[in-house]
Length: 90
Image (cartoon, rainbow, N blue to C red):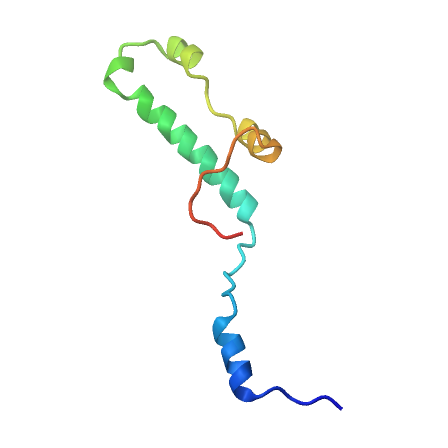
């Protein structure tokens, strides 16, 4: 027969146990989508900036290729691109 632990010991064990963050169900989709949108928005902001307003669209696209979702997915999944540190606990 095993003895139940003292309630005070159990209370301390619960109090000192690491907290568990709620799991993100679709964390990979959220990560890829956010990285893609951030890169796309940064490129769009660059296009609207002063030095690039005079460029033709073809010239700008040649200098700064469009961000493709496929490239973001491959870059993150192969480790070529590091995910941003958003303070996530996966």
